[in-house]
Image 1 (cartoon, rainbow, N blue to C red):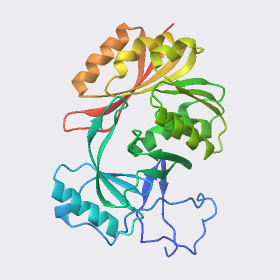
Image 2 (cartoon, one colour):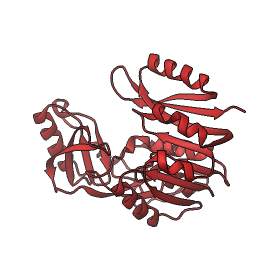
Image 3 (cartoon, rainbow, N blue to C red):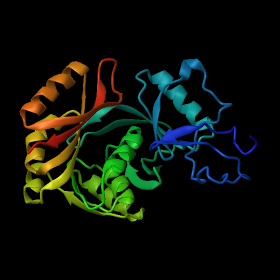
Image 4 (spheres, helix red, strand yellow):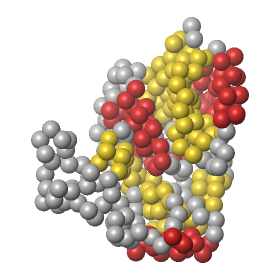
Length: 296
């Protein structure tokens, strides 16, 4: 079909498949609508095998995780020359500091760290050097938003810049308290809220969850996206949850670790209603999503 562009890749996000159209085409009746396509690498410009590698793209910034410095530099140069719209490339060497931000090294392009990122028809402003953000959870955020009903009160315990909250409030008429201890995360959360037309209401709160949550109403639903440490806050989340409420907990571990944690969860009076692998994390570990119901 001539209306389909061959300059970009087909991709999926939020449960939908997006097909790139040529500039002079229009959607066919009954087949959806034209949406803003995020920049993709052109099909005819594949990288040489020697410099291929995965990277995260946040707006016009790319973040590489290759350990080999020369391969990372070569890949950074290839990304800049690909015509994808990326203008700045950084190397991620891990997580550091109290607020678990990325340890970054500039590789190529502009030395910029602030970017505007789009996901599921929502927009976010962030500084990759001051807050942690993962674009790899785009589908997971939309999946969760679709499970939520209008009228719910939700607490996001480790909200970051608020991607879960903003995606949910954009699609559902809910009230969400988004908590984070990082002042920069709260700043960019507020800026991102301004960029979006929301059906629901978000209340950004700066502080430690141990202090903040004791003063909040009990929630219909709690989000716990702190994968390395979520289990340490399970008692606090349970105490802040209504009877028959639901906790969405994310953890990183092997399948053996997950089974062990699920047994602890059951002994804590919570029922595991859903378990899924969100994505791989290492050769032996994955990011796991668990939905937990507070039994009566």
